[in-house]
Length: 373
Length: 246
Ligand code: SF4
Image 1 (cartoon, rainbow over the protein chains, first blue to last red):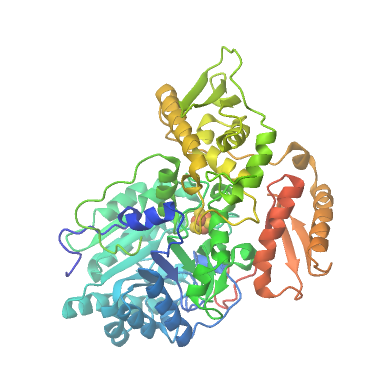
Image 2 (cartoon, protein in one colour):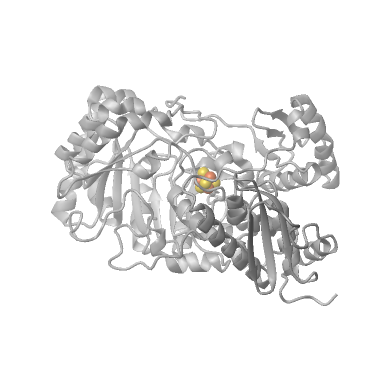
């Protein structure tokens, strides 16, 4: 498979949970299901200072994930049945000394590995080493012009050039080595970055990643980042214009399904976390990124720098927390920030649980990146 | 008492308690109001609507009075009154499930507990709710908007100012400490914010990994003692990244 491939769909706005019927059935029977996807980071640290960064709200007791901890964690994931691990979450994993080894070892163990990064330290040498182990690599880049990039991403202007160069190199290496990896760019869009939508869509066309995805910015339940969700509606024309720049090998996708909701949730219970777990770059295991901060200590389950992940996963405490989220003790409409990573999975499972629909029979070829639901 | 195989151990005590004091048992009294009813396996559930607005004014059921389903349906009816019929369909049974579950007893399943896997006694209530749903949708159409129904805090609680709320909660926190052998200094309630969230601060006395467990236990305790949906938090920790600033 090269490029974005001919027939298989790349779903950037939606969920692939329905393709994991066996796991849904096991969940419904009340079994302890392993997460299909774990989103995590190898560190809490970051070399950027993005204006929109949710990680600013996720501070918790910092511990170092060393090679032993991450290798044991990956082994446990493979053993219990985790399928995909995305290194995104609340830190810049590429600056961790264990980054390359973690990607390679996870891949060797049969796990699908993926990375979300600012792309700054990923030079050609590192990319050549790591890209063969990845399902996708996505670069966060929320501007298409140097000056605005510096303002929005909190770095020096010339860093923009280096990141652009690295993105270009990613595509080149992929083509040279005929790799399966998908290369993406991601714009986290605050309404006030509207002037950068088209420059970035055009930059992507020039740099030739496989896709550019434009998504809303998440905020916590107190609105700490100040995201104006009503501001997105006025950008719809520009967003459609950006999507129109798609061609055969470059897809521009707007996450309409989330932007359209203006930050609200249709569900009150959270069933998605056991299917899609998040972990902090501190090693903390909590159901999701929005609950990483010490403030949500009540939801904290364990730490992979102190305990084996398989023990955390099989513990009653893990299932106590997951059950709390699925019970009337909890109301995601009131107690959560806006539009979490698990949002689409939650919508699906909640609708199914309420009896809105039967599980659909999935036919045809499975979409790409199936293990990242 | 001979254990009933249809009732998981976790529900046995609460079910038998509820069966002693059924509140919503019986047929619906004569009324001109809209009634949505369903029947399955010899049991019946009826929701009387308040005028045109789809809010449940009264809820009744009939079932063999010693059947565990009677306890479930009674709790379902309790949740239904004052709620939109849609809320009853979507969440009624999980509220009943929650109310029937003795928190310290082992769960009937190892993973996530839902009405669908909570045992044979939930089968008929699930059928009744599915039928209520069909009937409601036939009458009112399918809802496309979002259900935001949430039981508010009680009027008594809402009328209290912060000091009043604090005074109400503090004796229960002290009671919890005493019942669990926790010293007075181990943690302290420092704030109740405008959304009624309670913030605690811990001293080093409680080991790090005991805090999450303790917080959940204390929250359950406070909810039981006060009847309010108390939410506990600890203090926010600010971003330790030196270059990033909110
Ligand atoms: S719904 Fe709430 S608890 Fe569940 S994953 Fe999203 S933010 Fe976390």
